[in-house]
Image 1 (cartoon, rainbow, N blue to C red):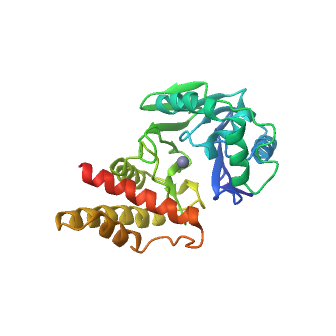
Image 2 (image 1 turned 135 degrees about the vertical axis):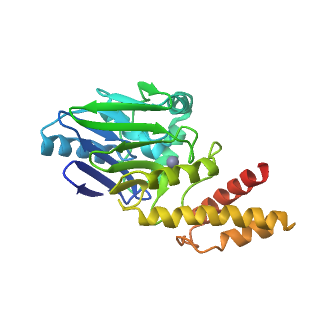
Image 3 (image 1 turned 180 degrees about the horizontal axis):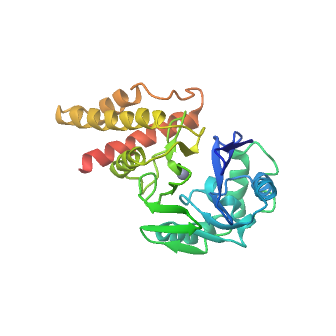
Length: 282
Ligand SMILES: [Zn+2]
């Protein structure tokens, strides 16, 4: 677990035991806000305690970037806060959490290399929602939360122009291949979202997975998305088969994946397949 500080007000924790999933906090003039709550109950509790101790402030608000388990499992340690997510995400959590049977939780435990990560889990949904966009103002500092879609229909970013930081959730995977096989994933919205990020005044992009970065990796990722899309369109109009198109796209140069890991190969294949379906529906 890596704990890092950026600028004067940004705290980030990266969990290398679970695909480098990222959570973070912003210190506002009078209070703290949390972005996502991760997959490791023990570590998220420690993170909260540590940031509250260092800043001598309390967490009052949580923003969830999207509904996937690795970003919301730690909610129970913020049940005294307003936990916001886009309306779509709140609805999905309310539908999804009852499906987390003991069996599912045991399965999830196997995915994390920390036996205590899910000990004492109490699934805690969001308790506040917004539609489209919302703002939180504390003194002269503003935080903008906006639903863009992309990785999931409810995916949202959290942007603080004062501190030039943007938390992207899983619309940004840095240094690893992104998961885009979710049923409501919209590759066009994802491309638009990456362009929107690049148009904003940001020094610190906090991804859903991977290291905090400047704009450079975003340009690389956007170029890849656009290359995949144009390759698919070009090959489809030249009458190439789905198999040929997916093979060609699989071999395009991008963040390498671990070919030994069946799960990683499947993730990339399903992500490309989702893009292929999308392109063909257009
Ligand atoms: Zn996700």
